[in-house]
Image (tube, rainbow, N blue to C red; front, side, top):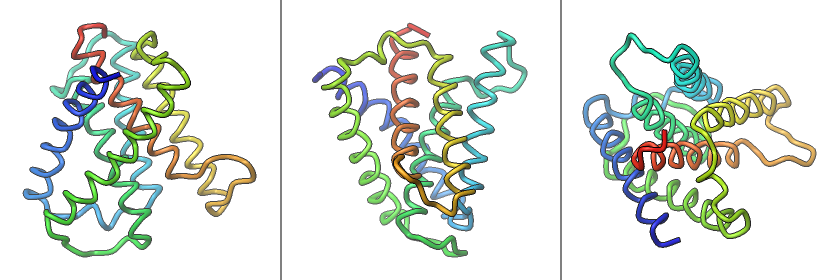
Length: 181
């Protein structure tokens, strides 16, 4: 498990670096995004991964690993937006955003460790295609929850789906790094 935690931290560090640099380049322009808009951004990236997987070629420079990094970062944005509650036109300090990023990822990692305990790291035997498909499933679930005015009867909420998306993206990045995808 220690190896997995180190791999997790390395994958997240690469995503965090991009997130912070983009925050410095663009500010927190993403603060205007409503939940459905964040979901659609992740959806576009997951669908692009799936299309590249199916066609076995790509014509735009960003590779699949870059898309998984973008998925992770947008899922973190989604969690931050849920925490802040109301989308707004505001520029937040990079230091504050960095703290929130770390908090959300720490919770996702804790969830991953708990699930790894119970599932025995089954994700290591999964395909990259499954990670893309499962991310799409989670996005469709969020869309349905939004249609239900944010309410669920017995299912997890939007935040839990974002956490799973973060972890699926990390798992894909770890396996890509290991050369298994």
